[in-house]
Image (tube, rainbow, N blue to C red; front, side):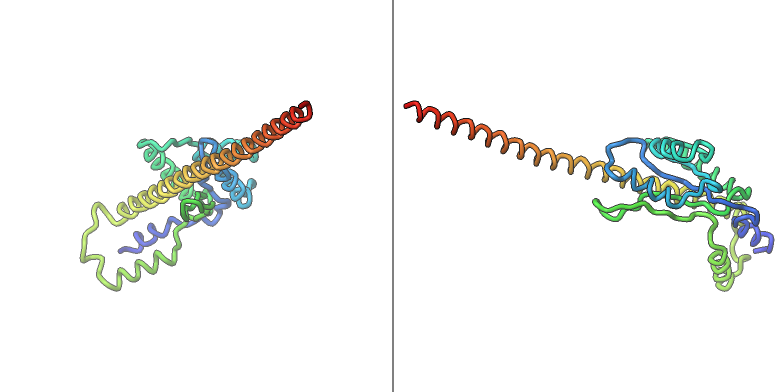
Length: 232
């Protein structure tokens, strides 16, 4: 690997004058999801800096929340995805936009906030940095590969640089899409849990109302029987 190729692969690092963070916020487009949406918003409020940061919002609820709290100026792009096959086309577009903005030096890093799945009743907001990729880990990987074999021992077509850029595109697409799918899973589980809890509350309420009705009915019958016995 030439020095030029090495430097090119390490170019995906923040520019010296870059400031602020580009956020990718994954939220819901529908309601009735219990505390899922508010938990995502609370976590975002604790980390977002209006003075320097910008955000790409996936989800109608998140877009309305951002505009109401920070204004539309902080929104780089807004998409409302609905779990359809064509969603991945939009994810590819978002990944290319993220890569372009970062390489142009607009931001020092890129972070994605999504909902991390633990189990069917436990999931929480999670923040992960997707750019820049740690330079030391890249250099270590290159050094380990170089120590095991010579780069001249195999051929990369059309070129190592093209392969690197293609791999970076795949990395961003797969990372964002995986976070999107995991967030959707947590959203549906939260909605399911909220509906189950509502159904359980309804059963309890119906039981309480039935008991109250029977009590009043029994009191009325007892009063009528007592009144009848006094008249005899």
